[in-house]
Amino acid sequence: MKKENRPINIGLTDILFRFQWTWSMVASVLHRVSGIALIFVIPIFIYGLQESLNSQESFDALKISLTHPILKFVIWVSLSFLVYHFIAGIKHLIMDLGFGETKAGGKIGAKITLISSTICIIALAYYIS
Image (cartoon, rainbow, N blue to C red; front, side):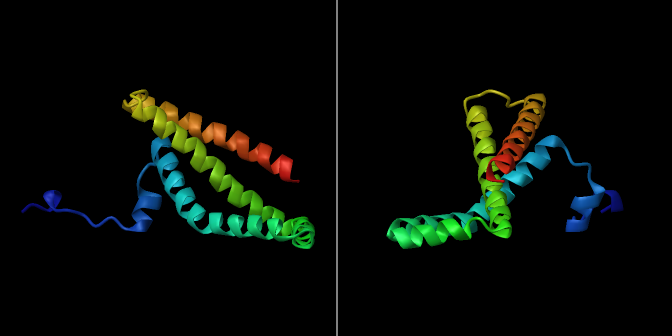
């Protein structure tokens, strides 16, 4: 077997620094990362909802704690994951309908996903602050 035909081992550093990242690749990786992050974030949001519905006192305590700047930042990051995952999911649903299945269509869809989610995340930061 010639050296050129042998399989190569691709490590994380090769993926990060050796290969050229395309729009579709970035959108796909971010969609997966945001999905994994939501696994941990959604139970926390559900717990906060439960605490806010327990009593008036627990609602007031939660309302006061949500004014802390660090907690606001954590909520913004968590909602950013949700916004990006939602927009990328809509892109996948549109592709399932048969639109944008070509390489050029995937590139355009990835750019639209990244740009629209960035705009929504910036708007979310303005709204939370």
